[in-house]
Image (cartoon, rainbow, N blue to C red; front, top):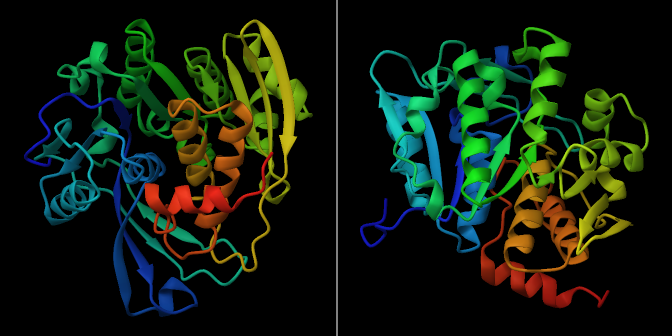
Length: 327
């Protein structure tokens, strides 16, 4: 944590950060000998993106009391994250993943070593020191509740406490079906967590799987009927659909995505989208400006190899937005 930062974070994220080893050359992992070490995690991607835009972002998690845990802590602190709520677990290891080098336009295959990881042992007790009344916003995903029953309990606790304290809450379902005991449990748990959220950010396929409804409009209505203030649905290259209630009036629109010359790696695009939407809404921008910023940062994320390497700082974002045509 930077020495000059003593006050509680205004934004908070939580989940699992893993040490990631990315192959230096294309091909099957069985053939690769050299890897680059980075960090991975949807929740940390969003935390880093918001920190780069100047927000005071806290990170709540566990890592192993090992070299990979130290690497993750140092990397996150170097990105400006407040890690006062990141604890070292002496009994369980840091999660790892190995990722193929992506070929243009093809999602790389990933091998995980995360079962029994330190973060899978997260529980409500890990949030005892959180100053919820000082919190302005909480960003949550559907990954922590998939890790274990105790991490699921933490997710419920975080969302309910943040909401009760008056913070806004964004929720990205970020489906990981292979981590769940059953489809029903995944659907019921994530839909329940969405009821404690102000802004729900599913992809179209995720929304269909979770709600059983087909169109963006019907998916949005499912969550609005259950208490969400706005639902922003990612439509891939086609852009995004927004439906929300502002000042007692409902507003709906679709904004097209930004053309990208070459898609290098789509991993992290949804996290970039969340960074754009959440940062713009916290900046007091209109829903239309928020969705456009989401589309913009999502388009930057797919043009680089890493999960979060394409996320811009505030100066670059301001310059890019200044070049956009007026809406």
